[in-house]
Image (cartoon, rainbow, N blue to C red; front, top):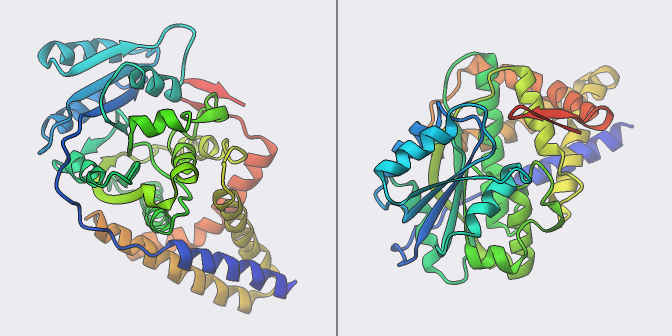
Length: 358
């Protein structure tokens, strides 16, 4: 049993090494391409003005901003229309009654714009002044079809908020490294750009269109499989958003992310997810059977995870968590991942934006 556990831990450590290294390429000069920012929005009346204000402060302003209201139950539509009345390049639209969800909102806008580049973001984000310039510049290379960027969480304090900041920082580091290695394990739709033509060529999200998740990584992997790893680039572009407010909200968010685990067109992410879950479960099991070897494995794996997250915090210019937050996350993460994996297998239903999914 111990040899099997070390095999799993070694495999997880290998993935940390394989995907946890990145070096961003300098951004070239800005291309003469039209850029459309697409913002799917549901019940985002309070957050949408912050997002739009940050987009209007861009050093390279988008040519179009599309706000697609996904049957909001608050004043999102009224807010979108008010901003559109002030700026001619902001286009509000509503999903028809027969359609719902983030992918439907994205496709609704993509089918109406003639822009060369589609830049997707969330309504609860705030963009750095050079976000659009940093992400669009990579499309100067005609081989590049999709470009990713960094998403950081606001440092609002509290154990839950710091746990999420450390977890996402580690995930962003692995995302950047996997993209540069031509094996994009995931992506974040809060900041993602791709050529409209590439979206059309690969058929968008394909059979995963009806899934409530995967508007980002499933598309990136389809583009990578069609065009090759040379079509990928990861930029220093950066957006900021809020962490989930409660552990329950975090659980539902992660269950939504995991709901697409059988839809990936590549083997990297499904096997990576299994290995992460097995490694964390192995730490809990090994703690009772082999305390000393397990402690050594825990220290080794956490050293790798902390280094990746630390580099991400530096890249994103985000405040570093306290040593207590690092320690809490290192101790809680195996239990958190084990419970998440079990819940995803036993009862994978979740709620998102006021809707229930199974």
